[in-house]
Amino acid sequence: MKLALIGFGQAGGKVVDHFLAYDDAIDGGFVESGLAVNTATTDLQGLEHVPQSHRVCIGQARVNGHGVGADNELGAEVAETDIDEIQHAIDRIPNHEVDAFLVVAGMGGGTGSGGAPVLAKHLKRIYTQPVYGLGVLPATDEGGIYTLNAARSFRTFVREVDNLLVFDNEVWRSAGESVEGGYDRINREIVERFGLLFAAGEVGHGDHVAESVVDSSEIINTLSGGGISTIGYATETVETDGSGLLSSFTGSDDGFDDGSATNRLTSLVRKATLGRLTLSCDVSSADRGLVVATGPPRKLNRKGVERGRQWLEDETGSMEIRGGDYPITGGNEVGAIVLLSGVTDVPRIDQLQQVGIEAKETTEEVRASAEDEFASLVDTGGELDALF
Ligand SMILES: Nc1nc2c(ncn2[C@@H]2O[C@H](COP(=O)(O)OP(=O)(O)OP(=O)(O)O)[C@@H](O)[C@H]2O)c(=O)[nH]1
Image (cartoon, rainbow, N blue to C red; front, top):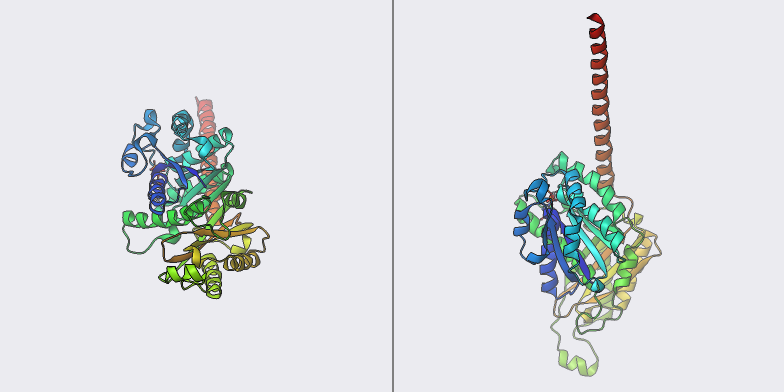
């Protein structure tokens, strides 16, 4: 499916930059346009693939190109004030070619976490296409302000988008990795999972007609109904060097074995679902799901996808599990992407919400005690007045 990608803030911009590179590398055709919006000019300058004309610096009057320093209320304010500038850049996207918008942002900073929900709300008012969010959660040791920003912004972002796809930095970090090196690797993991999913819905890709190609309406239907989504992905290397010539005459295989293809796909679907998800959750709490088998067309079969799909139906107890293929010629990996949508049992989000509630209570306590102090000062003032 064709996406208009809009990266908000530093993390958002970098992830969109990676999406553009990935789309090119796999010839995916799922990116219609990629934009980056930021309050910091240096972040915008650091991008490699987003065209200059698609980089929008907002909040110049307030922060003069220096970022909002993790103040997400300020991030939201400047996004509201400068929404016309962002719209101006979006106007250059051929809107009729776009199946959906995807607003990408780190939830822990100021610009993206404040601005992304504002932009999503605006887009939903203007366009008829779905508006999805891709929210990156901060790692837990990044500091209180990041967690607090994420806790506040998450609720708003979920409310404003048609579905919030989530990626949790905490789960994907590796010990001993530099921050920058780590982000580069993590960003590749992000775009591989979400990119393959969206590329799968881009009908007409490649020259092979799969048994049951996933199309964009299946992705849209799985995401519709709102809430939050997570993705699992697993791959296996396969032999692809059978003799093509003879097999094309005999109709026999080039190493293709229906039974083992079925088994392979079924176990890949299990691995993808039960392995590391972009956001950990209780799989049985998913409301809807989509299974996509990727890889060389001759290694994919309908039965394997169907078995995997049925297994996921049993795991989730949901009747809304869809399935299909995304054939990729030339590779030697078979994979399964599992999209779980409308998940509700997510410990990480409960933890974030708890932080949000505690922060609100602390703020209220601080305010109440400040008011008490002020009142007692006024009282004392009254008593003092009476003395004179
Ligand atoms: N996955 C990933 N996360 C990132 C990356 N860069 C920053 N982050 C995360 O994003 C959060 C910080 O958000 P940023 O996008 O840097 O901040 P911002 O939206 O630009 O806001 P300000 O810097 O406050 O103006 C932190 O939780 C980081 O862990 C990245 O390239 N990839």
